[in-house]
Amino acid sequence: MISTPKTPRTRAAITAVDRVRRRWRRRAGRRTKLPQGNAIVLAVLRSRAHRLLSAAAIELRYIGRRSRREYALPVQYAQAGEQLVVRPQHWERATWWRNFRIPQPVTVRLAGRLRDGTARVVESSDPQWESARQAYTTRWPRSTPRVTGPLVLIDLQP
Image (tube, rainbow, N blue to C red; front, top):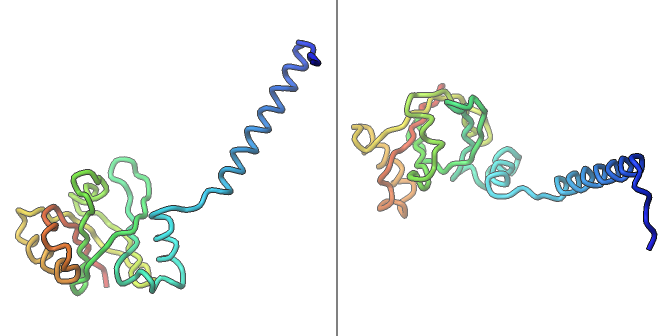
């Protein structure tokens, strides 16, 4: 077995080669990762093929109340005139809807077009909750027994 001399120069060269190898592995890993879940749905909603999903989902863009980061996520919705009703899936665990306890500006990609609006949370104690729930369950009748938590109302601007 050949042994390499343990000089500072050889150690530095080996370290440099290892660093380059690791960098290339990371780059290769980034290239081979495929988009999953929300990324695929958002890609379809942003493309010309948006009609495949536009009847059921919209892209909701907002800025986080604490982080001030911009977020984009696909959500299922029901339309009631110039208002959209969104039911947070697994609202007990999900946290995104809490950004709208105080009305916040949002951007929505509806039928392939970006529209501005204002989103706010409607709790079950709010008088508007029942009408929002009715609009949602009319559009999505299978979810009727599960619509119990808060709903997000989005008032679209003309």
